Image (tube, rainbow, N blue to C red; front, side, top):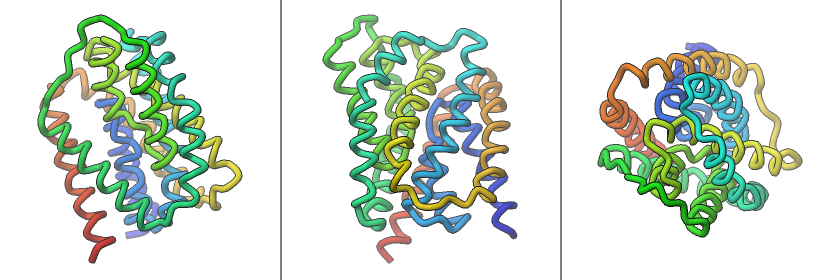
Length: 247
């Protein structure tokens, strides 16, 4: 099977995850680029930011059309992560690729366990400025350092810290993902290795289409079912990445 043929279904899966859960774009994109398409870890994390930005914008539009985005809360949360995302993006270029891969595997495992526990944080409607700034800054640092959008962290933080209803947290997390990923990509602009656009473009095309399907899927399937399926996929990805590096 050619690399392009592998890129098409992988991109579709990423798009569906972002559209349905507001999360999982880079967690799935990075290992797909490395293990299916042969990207080096540094190139994969940079390419993932490009893919996640475009796909998340598409999913964001779909959620915004049904009023499922809290723009003020999302922009406040994203603004706190701007500087940490930029600084971490520069720092990531100095970290050995094996270390980045192991850190990514650990992050994927943590995200999987969070989803499999199926705990939905409950917001009480009150917004703590300091907590919002701290959560946003932490998410920005993760985005810049590992090339991930951080949606799996943004959704519970938006609910628990900023009091955004669960129904709007998915769409709002996409706004946060786009903002943080844009900053992280800008920080890598001068140090990023060359990217294979012949593989990125078909991956991106099916991801964009999948984002619309994911939004429709979220309206038909229970959140608990989506979380369990996605959590199981992430756990398998994390185990595979960890074993590949350690063995």
